[in-house]
Length: 52
Image (cartoon, rainbow, N blue to C red):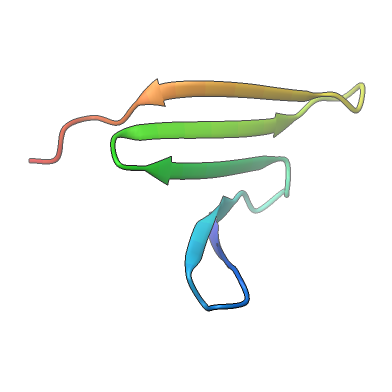
């Protein structure tokens, strides 16, 4: 994954090496946006594992 930053140089998410998955983490919620073969998007939300 490589970082994506906005115009203010703030990190907004990560994109996979093949550019098919974009991941956003805000607090303990991870949102993944995946590009499907048919051109649609799949969006999932999950809890981040607790930090040790």
